Image (cartoon, rainbow over all chains, first blue to last red; front, top):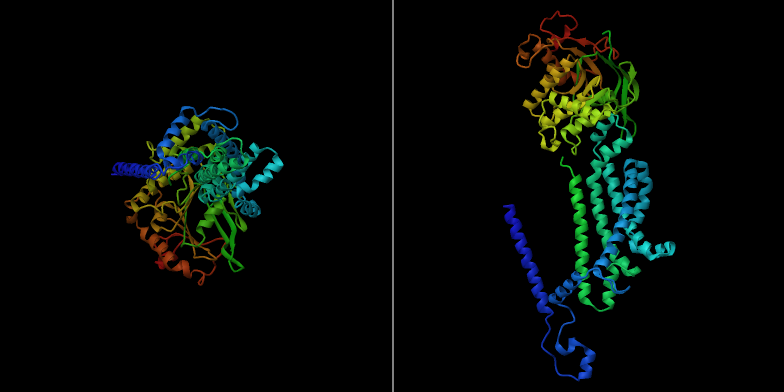
Length: 279
Length: 296
């Protein structure tokens, strides 16, 4: 029954995809050649006006371009012409670095907040105030203090990944079942061992949820941050191709950004599955 | 009573009331237990019997008075006193073996993993879970989970076994089987044990002495009932013993009416420090408790 459902769902998915592609193709197919015009004027107007070809690329154009990118994803011909693979690698590198720093700070701090009602009360106003700030608002301050655009981008990733992880860790730690803590108490388990053998495994699913939210936000933010700081990265690539008026490349970037975001999320979902326990 | 292994001396526990002031759960509570003895504390919900157990476990400290175990005042939880929790409280991410090993390795911190495993397996076998040691708690039935809880508590070889209504969430058949198991283990090993229950039959079958607590707040120990049934009693012919109904009626009568009315009608000569010891028997002139008959 369930395999039947999976099959039907994938068939439906393919139908929807095919419909979308066909609609796209038809919509961008272009009309017949337009009225005759002065050749000089036609040259100025470009293909759009003379052959009736749409400026919006169709699925075939995009497909051809994807193949081209796939053939040499890592070429490097100067600062304004790098392969999409290199640009992606820069973005992923920044996200992972900023994210790793955030993990290193958010989980221990979240642990302390979750364990101590005093720290919870004391730090809560700060977290509530800092959490809703758009990470990009930090950018000028980061650029001014750090004086390095690459590190500033990493900082922005760090700051936006921090809050969901910290809040979820604190919540997970604070809501560990009292009876499990009582088991540890009656067994005279020392605080450090208790933290690692009881509280951490008990809170792990909640912590992983926070980590998944954070990686999603980090991947959203990196595109915008790289548009601002420029130089390298998929965000910069999108903006650069917009300036080049290569809509095909913009579409491909959008697709790739979605794909990488999905893979990052799925990777953490796998880890979450490992630490989840049925009760 | 030459050897007072556990002695609760004048303990009190109070909670702040929501509107100010204090609710006294109990006050000036005294009783003692001997080594190797199985005691049950019986009372209605809210009488503070769980609080008494938590004080013995060290999970709560009394506001007044002191609980002494083996000559030492209780200042916190200790590996000498193992607790079997009502809701089994197994760590769901650990297997059966992992849960018991966790306790064993907490007890003997420098043991090798082989030794820990051997000790854990010994107690898993004792409660009849051999073959399921690698299962996670979620794969076990309620009764099996509570068996793991028992194995975990016993594996640290505690001086006292404390049980907070351990079988109340189980069906009657499983409950009976686990009572047999606990009784066998406690008698075989001379384990001192204290169990909270509101099940009269459970208390009759398991306990050597039954502590009757009146309704809270301001709960008191009305009396301590000595079980007149022979120590080698068996579940199947328990009810044929001549003293069985005297005891059972006495306990039921207490739960039904006297637990409520005791405070208004405190018997002459009642001393909180030495609650009367009663031994309900079929013979009216048996030593220690001739008033028990009339109660039924």
